[in-house]
Image (cartoon, rainbow, N blue to C red):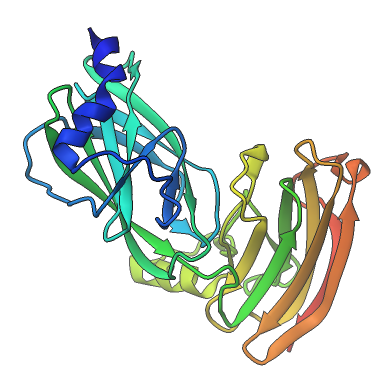
Length: 308
């Protein structure tokens, strides 16, 4: 019976949601895999009776116009489908919940991947999810705030790596350590924030001091195509929102994996609001570049520069 209800979910959901559509959803900012498009906004009613959504797994809340295949999953209590869309988008999507969650009785799991149109406007967006049961009853909305940022971010200093194939390249930026000039800090996917290590014996920072230190430190914005989970962005940035510390900087690019591609042409550059700094470096990464370790110190030297 649960299988029959799942097969019929599109017709059931259409009764409660204004009608499923044969449209592809190409006009919507949000695109989902394994889903059916419905024109019209998804109402974010948080008090509606019906199946509740639990355990939503969202890879990141920072997205870029044109980014692809970001995983999204979760559970619906006694639900046959889930409705997913951006508030005020051209439409939303019906995603089935065909799998029983073995960890949670009466919960059924959904899985999909999100892509965002290159025309998605920068700024705040709200992701809305609502469960639907076999009778067509729509449950309360779960909402998540997303931040859509331009592909090239702004900051006091931005180091950018971009490449041309669906491979996994990693940006490494060695930055000065204001607490110990002899021990620089490396910002990369495993250490995405350039906070200096605490000096032994110093008291723990207050929450306000820690927040200020994080804001002043450079940070990696995104680990694109990590582990060959292709997201389509093919860009990583280390961003200093505030003036960066004085000293020497080193930029390296680690070809973690070509993910089945023959090669990857990458370009790395650094810029400030006054224009480029250092040099622009390019390289064609091949299989030879993927060999060796992929930790701290890994990667091909792109360029270096100094901040006075």
